[in-house]
Image (cartoon, rainbow, N blue to C red):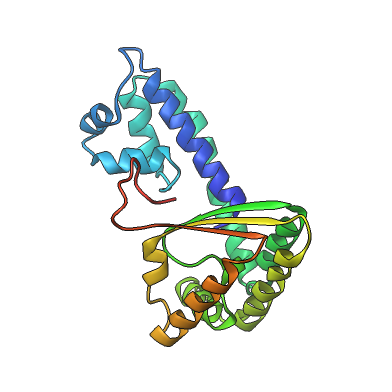
Length: 222
């Protein structure tokens, strides 16, 4: 999904959290709200942190459980905006990955510093072409996009020129799983890890790894 979509989803999550905090009967914990709704606590957390898209039924139940049913129309309007965005996103994908690549390239070129957290795959700005090809192909298969894979791979490689421009800084923090995910053949992953090792010495790149054994205070997910 696009950055705009994710930002909107996170904004809705912040609004849901606000409703939980301002319950007329008293501020609710996530666990208390989950009990009222009959949900797993993880669902409350995912909705509030923008990691899951709510359904209209979810939003109505949330408004009622936080004793603020009048908030539902506003929540529903936000969701309708999501759905409109998804439709336009899918229309763009009907023409392949090119429109999305052009938008992302423009956004990256405007930046002087980029910070990335990734828990599943190695980020695009440090991918080898072969690793990128496997990642893009997986998305193409999932989204039923039938063209543009090679163009997307080339676009990713071209965006990496940003790393060699003065005054740029890429800060990447990855969960250890991103280094181990076999989204590609082992030989491709080995070459990708070798590239990461080489990039660790660049002035414009800062790499960090959160190991599996590290204690964490929050779930290591976007």
